[in-house]
Amino acid sequence: MMAAVAAPADQATPRPKHLLDFADWSALHIMGLLNTADVMAQVLTRTIKKVPALQGFTVATLFFEDSTRTRLSFERAARAQSADLIGFAAGGSSLKKGESLHDTLRTVDRLLVDLYVVRHPVSGVPYQLARWTDAAIVNAGDGRRAHPTQALLDAYTFRAHFGVAEGGLPFAGKRLTIVGDIDHSRVARSNIELFTKLGGEVTLCGPSTLVPNEFADLPGVRLASRLEEAVEEAHAVMALRLQQERMTAGLLPSRSEYVARYQITEKTMQHAHPDAILMHPGPIVRDLEVASDLADGPRSVIEEQVANGVPVRMAVLYSLLVGRQ
Ligand code: CP
Image (cartoon, rainbow, N blue to C red):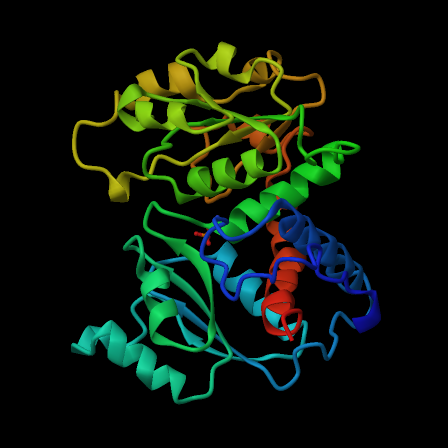
């Protein structure tokens, strides 16, 4: 298995030590990760879905905020490569007893951790932890700032359906439309960063209170006020959950108005590319941001996204722990 893992994609530039966002990651490094994920996906088809690639390494999952998909798939990804795994889920640490974040990290560091997977409700925490430890940090979602492994598994899923362009950037000529609560979404920010870095175009649509105009200044990004216009010719339409836990009052129209103007339905998808796929990072709220029959229908790749989280996160752990040595 080890010999089959892709070599670093860009030999001239060392792969970054951490995965906090994509600022330091080149398109070649990112495609190298996706190619490594292909190898990991092959491992997961075997009867024994386990390799010794990370034997002797310790991964710690520090989840200060709830998660189902991200935490479990990182745990699956670490165990499938024989890493030792420690960590806590939201509310399960001694922070509740008054221990500081710095002291928490110093304490866990003493357990000889090689890589931390960190989720936190406050933007910037994984970046701060990266200054306090010699271990690698993977950002598993910080506030509204970034969720890079979600964007990677989304790109991996997109690539499986639409392939990559010959020559030039891999997603050149491809369109992703993201609909809903863009402002509070780390998934939107990371998808914008990754999809445009790979050469694609991103259209954003939602209530104006939830889609700040500044996004239009980003290269490769445009805003559309009407849903039908936003999804026109889109290869993928991504619905986002309304993150009411991060909202102050008054940002939303009524639920019925939101559904009427922004819910993604089969009819919406008829305006998109004929082969367009429906994406959603989860968790979904059925019949609010997306019609339930569409979420369960043939255009939906929502469960495929979840499944792809394991090989993609295997590739991230492998690349940061072994691929740099
Ligand atoms: N998409 C995502 O981050 O889901 P979880 O919150 O369940 O991890």
